[in-house]
Image (cartoon, rainbow, N blue to C red):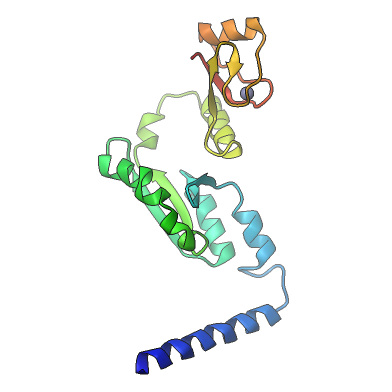
Length: 180
Ligand SMILES: [Zn+2]
């Protein structure tokens, strides 16, 4: 009985806090709704959760603006447990009730090593597209069609993709094209 009474008191306390928050003037302050919405844009949706991928500063800004704690998933491509976690546990529908209570960021701990020596402009383009296209910066070509948006590409563009001498983007969805 005592614990039930405590839960009831805690719920009331939360309701009380909420009402107080709602009475505050909005805009400008930490945790205000428009600031949080602006800072939390651009997560990659996987299962029930929108993830910030390899962008710790953006995730931290979102956490500060929305007043939510940050969950950091530090992983590496060689870590089979990490890959299994992200393929099964972290996409499980049972996490849905937690999705909006935290800010989620995935950090590839080997990324710096693997991207050393790569063209920074190309890497920048890849990162921009990945954010804009919900994690899918690259699209495969299948019989002249971009599998990112299903547009049929002109034959000269298809042959340029097959030559793979330089980077070709889909004229419609802008994804980087790779030969199928
Ligand atoms: Zn396309």
